[in-house]
Length: 153
Image 1 (cartoon, rainbow, N blue to C red):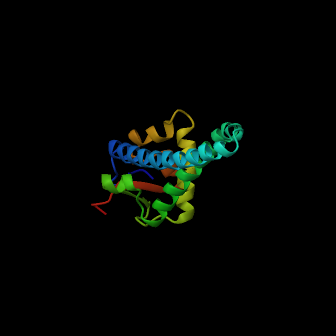
Image 2 (image 1 turned 135 degrees about the vertical axis):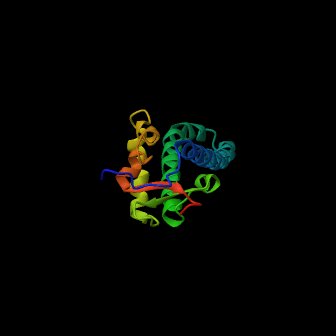
Image 3 (image 1 turned 45 degrees about the vertical axis):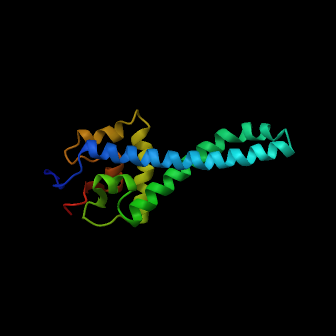
């Protein structure tokens, strides 16, 4: 395709702000869940003092797995159901297919999976949106999606 298909692309700065908002919200929620878990474990330590060893052994893998699953569910479900995460809503942007449609759950999951590819090499895949002619990141290209201004579509 020789010319750009996107006329109302969300700019890079708006995308970064939306992602930052989402990340902060998710981490507040994640921290809250782990604070509850820690409280329960502290209660358990009064009954069984060696429970701290179980906590110390399980904390890192459970923390990482829950981080991974929470982010997967949040981005996949919000994009599939609404085309927007909370951060994108606040920033006035949304994700759609290249045909101006809401993305399917499968495409939304593929797009989220692409976040891993976009992030892995020093976040180059995310930064790519700043220089791409259509302002698409690698995960957008993978899922055949784009981020556009919600007001203009």
